[in-house]
Structure formats: C-alpha cells, structure tokens
Length: 462
Image 1 (cartoon, one colour):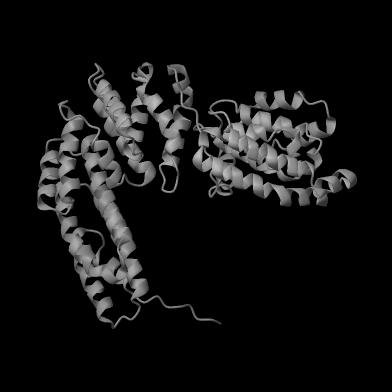
Image 2 (cartoon, rainbow, N blue to C red):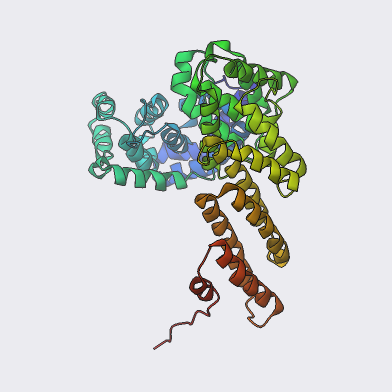
C-alpha cells in the first residue's frame, strides 16, 4: 500500500470544504430529514467517485489510503457505503466460502459508520454489505465487534445483519456471487507488494488476483511497475513457490523496461538453476492453471515470457519455448510449426503437463481465430478445418477435440442465425460442409447433424 498523493489530498480537502459550506448540509443539520441527506449524497458523492476512479486507474496502491481519508467526519459519511462494499469483496475467500483472515479494513470502515452522527441515514445503504461481510467472517470476530458497541439500537441493528441462512455454505456462496455482480463493472482492486517471506505467504493470493485484473486492457500500470521491480529483485523471496508464480504472471502480462526484464530473467534463472527438481513441473502446472483461469493465454503474452527464458539453460522450459518460437514466428498454420509441435509432443507422454501446455496454446490460437471470424468469411472456417485435422492427429486427445467441437458449433450456429434462407447458396454450402466434416471429425452423428439443420416449428397458439 502507498500513502495518498498530495494532489489527491488537496482535491479531497476541496471537496470536504464544499460539503461543509453547502446548503444541502446546512438544511440537513437543521431539519435532520432523510431526504435532505439524500440530497447531500446526490450532490457530492459524484465528485468523490470521479476522483476515486482516477486513483483506482492511475494509483491503485493508494486506494486504501484514499478510503481511510474519507473516514474524516468532514465528509459526513459520504461514499462510505460504497467503500464498505469494496472492503467486503477484497477479502480472499477459502474453499468453505469464508475469509482466510480477518478483514481489518472492513472493520475500520464499519466502526466509523457505526459511530457516525449520520448513522441513521447511512445504515439504510449498508445492510447487504454487512450481511455478506458477516457471512464470510468468523463468529468470534463478529461477536467482538458487536459486544464492543454500547449503543443498544446500533447493537440491535448489527445483530439483525447476521443471517442464519448464511450458515449454509451453498446459500453463502450464492449470496456472494450475486453481491459481486453488483460491483463487477467497478474498479476497486488493490494489493500489498510483500517484502518478506512471511508477508508473501499472506499476500501472494490477493496480489496474483490483482495482477491478473490489472493485466486487462485499458489500465495505466506504469505506477505499479516500480513495486513489481522491487518484488522480483528481492532475493529473500526467491525460494517461495508463490514468488515463482508471480514472476511467471508478470512475465506473461506486463511490458517491463530493460531493467525489469533483466530482473525477471535473473529471478527465473535463479529458480531454474536451483536444486529444486520440481521447477519444471511447477512452471507448466501454473501455466496450465492460469490458461484455464483466463480462458486462454494470448500470443502476445507468450512472446513476452518467451523473451525472458534464458535458452542457455538446457531444461524442459527452454525446450518448450524453442518449439513455441517456431509456432509464434511462422504461425500455427505453417507446416514447420505443425512439425515442430509434433516432434515436441511425441517426446513426452500424451497426458504430460508439457503436452497439455502446447494443446492449450494451440487451442487458444484457434479459439481467437474462430471467435473473431465474421460469418461472411465462412470459407475461411472451411480452410482452417485442414489445420484442425493436423492438430487432432498430432494430439489424439479427446478433450482437445471436444473444445474444437464447441468452438466450431458456436461459429456454425452464428452462421445459421445470419443465413436463414435455406435455399441460399451460403446456407447450402455450410450445410454440406458440416454434414461431411462434423461426422468425419466425430463432432456429431448423422442424426445430430440433421437435427442441427432441422426447421424448428413454432408451437401452435390455441
């Protein structure tokens, strides 16, 4: 976490001054009506949110400091309901749908709201956040908060937010999923970059999630790259499996400067040259798991990390990227690429993690092609099926074939939605191709293909 930039402090102070001098606040303090507080919310949460979004995009490591600054009573509790929701969702969840550790930031914001002179107005906007936060927390943690409160009315309110139904893990998870959806378009992710091995143990999970999130297009990540470089240069962390995964993650998704690239290569080399005989297994396992999580590693990401792999180290990682270099340079449709993949693949057991990596890599490339293909270019789909045949023969893997079927069927259905006239040349060409190819590939039976092109009759209205 970082301290709040002075410019952001100045802007917040200006907003606070406007709130304190506003007619809306004066009227609320005079009449103490809920509608007057709602007018205050409407007038000033917008400017706070605009500034919050700027910080979230440009300086995400300052978000907690920003949120803590809003605890100043001069802001009259504005924006705290939103911040409370953010604090609930930032906590890392275990397999039992409970927090891995107590959420102190959630506690601090909640306690500030509880002690606010505007609690009666604010509480109307925080019920769901408290319910989910309590559902994910331990009973002891919740009890300690409630028992520390002397105000009977406030204590009673909090007790009603601890819902019995959320003792059931299924209901708890369902509620969390629904709650997350309310925030899915909002940027509030932040993280701690650890400096010691013990800190890394606590912060690795949230940090990985943060780095995956920030790797999406549209974010300005220049201000977090110095922290990335400090992390990967910290030799105290080199022996941690989490550190290895963080290096891979940064290597895949972030364009580092020359210094950052050298630091990454140095860290990766140190791990690859270590006495740990599970390095290759951990590398490919993480690559495969990550590919599954993000629905396919892009060619650009593969190029990034390939450039960081020191080929003078003769190990399985170098062998993999030597092969992948050809696939990336010449394109996965090129005969040389297919031959290099075949040679590499046949050197490993069919279900090895190395072979899973190359299957996933090829599948991601085919998926990107098909997902971006316009229905008017369906002849290109006919052509790419020749490449399908080559890789299906090389891999001889049922799961790979099933994924290709799913991608193909998605495209064909998109075509049929566009070409509805069954007498048209386009429709007939597509139908003829699918009837032959899908059956030959084992994607469908003759009966299933017939059903695919069968006219769906609308039920008669009575």
